[in-house]
Amino acid sequence: MASRDEIFTNKLFLNAVLPLIKVIASDVPSLAKKFEHAHGVMQVSALDPDSPDGKVATHFVVNCGEWLVHNDKVDTAPHIELEFKSIEAMNAFFKGKMSLATLPKMKGIAKHPGLFASFMAVLLKMSSLLTAKGIPEDEDTKALLVKCYFYLLSSGISQLNKLGHPDVHDWALKSPDRVYAWAVNGHDELSAYLRIKAGKSRAGRGVYKRAMPFFTLRFDSLDSALGILLGLDDMLDSAKKGKLIMEGAPEVGAQIGEYMLTVAGFIQ
Figure 1: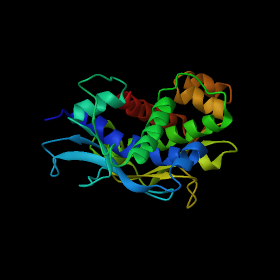
Figure 2 (figure 1 turned 90 degrees about the vertical axis):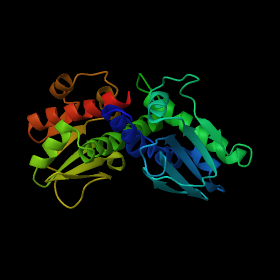
Figure 3 (figure 1 turned 120 degrees about the horizontal axis):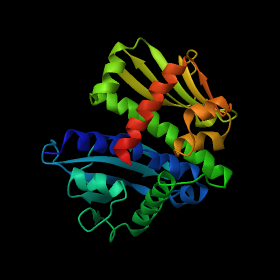
Figure 4 (figure 1 turned 30 degrees about the vertical axis):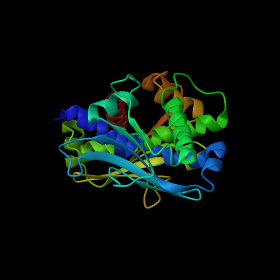
């Protein structure tokens, strides 16, 4: 049986990281073109004897460029599939620890070579983005990277709450109805938010419009956002320089920053 931390990590990959495939495939023109006429079900899974289906998975249904993402759901007959031998092997692979022991079985290549090649191209793009050590030069790539991190972190914190992570869930249980947001000035399309209420949480994409967020972690530019997201800059120093604007109580910013690090600690 996988350890608690391995399960936390795996659920983050299934529910927060892998869904970014749709974002990347839609936002990168060269990748979007590959799926313009594609039809099929693509799945990433890990064998797990403790799961009802004998495995855990997230799968994607694509139909002429339109994507549906099924988080943490197994499809019994996908057209193509990357199947890992265990949760631990899948976690290690996506953390960059590639070896013969962590490589997945690749199913469906012979029958659907084009779909498989396109899916792998998106996976490789996601890997290159999330393993970036420095700020990209291209503005479109900067924007996509910020969007991916905002989505990943908001979804990741929500997932840890739903999984009962002690610190995150305790915080959520004590919280009234509040919304926490991530934003960059002049780039509303990159925004993400997290709504917390009495132990329940929901991550959302875009600007939260029903009310003013209780707290927003706002950046003055894409470069400033990536400085924090990639761990290149210090939050306090960025705040002093006006690169990071904490719209709300500073102690809330420190708390959100801590949970952002918690998510990163599991998936890196």
